[in-house]
Image 1: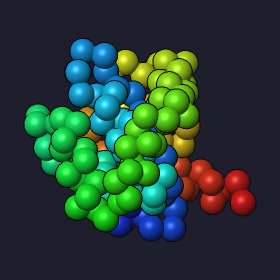
Image 2: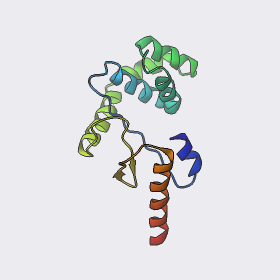
Image 3: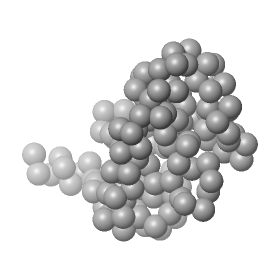
Amino acid sequence: MAQLVEAFPDDLQVLYKHYPLNFHKNAMPAAKASVAAGKQGKFWEMHDKIMEKYNALSDQYYLDSAAELGLDIEQFKADMADPSTQAMVNEDMQLAGRSGVRGTPTFFIGGKKASGPRSFEAYKAIIEEEIAKKKGKS
């Protein structure tokens, strides 16, 4: 993903939607932690910390990560517990279900679910095709 963002800084917009899988006991708390961090402007930083230690997630890890990121810990705890945080994740899950998402990660490019190999080159080609289509319509 980082390679694609770097390759297409003016043409690629990344939208992240949560789809915590119910068989992963830490998926929902991790989603809520990233949303709570996002409320303080640190979504991607928390996301990256979660991905770094996805096999060792815990409530304490989220708090430690929030502290490392310089977040207001009391606000972070309040946002984790806030029903609006859960509601944001639930909305993402509903959208994913309507869009045919069945697992993670799932990528959409140009509004269509990307299929085929998951590689920089494959996604780069799809993005270039989408850019060419858009420029052809201008």
